[in-house]
Length: 233
Image 1 (spheres, rainbow, N blue to C red):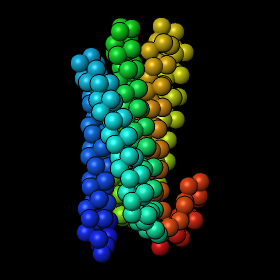
Image 2 (image 1 turned 45 degrees about the vertical axis):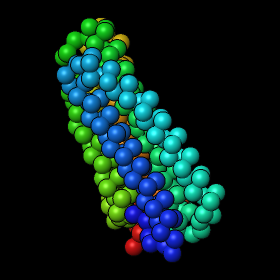
Image 3 (image 1 turned 180 degrees about the vertical axis):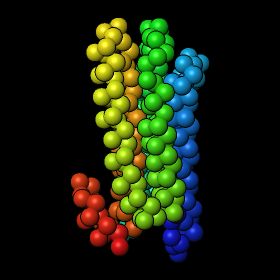
């Protein structure tokens, strides 16, 4: 990911922190997969594993930020190097929040299981949105590793599809609750769960925006797709 510098030690430090960031991404991706598996199988054991992983995710976030602060203090990087380090720090925070959402999904699964909620609730229909969200995160991490602005732009466009899936799922849940008041409590759990999945897509989108920031030096947050396309081209 980093460009070559006169100081090989500086190169090593940038590579090390970039590698650690990608390791965190892999851990968080695993968390999401486990959380969705726990939902599809109503697995207490797997849901519990997801919640336990959160401690490691938090520790890695602190470790990466500490290393970035150390590099900035010692090397005083400028231009693209500084953007890279700042972007890794922000992207790390987004990954930690994805981990929070995965843990939230796992806790909602445990709540649904404990409540004895009917399996007829449309929990499996969340699989489409969850697969889209985890796929988006995977694309964002791959694009970050390659600093691929074209893929980053595609990710920003795809995030709207997850939002549409979420809206459709909410309408379906409202129908279930109106037809059978006994499903209100577990349906609300599913609603919060669906929102967590949507937020995973949002964090993937944030990481994609950071890729463009590193490469182009432009902050494209809160910017229309048309304007972002102009920046990327």
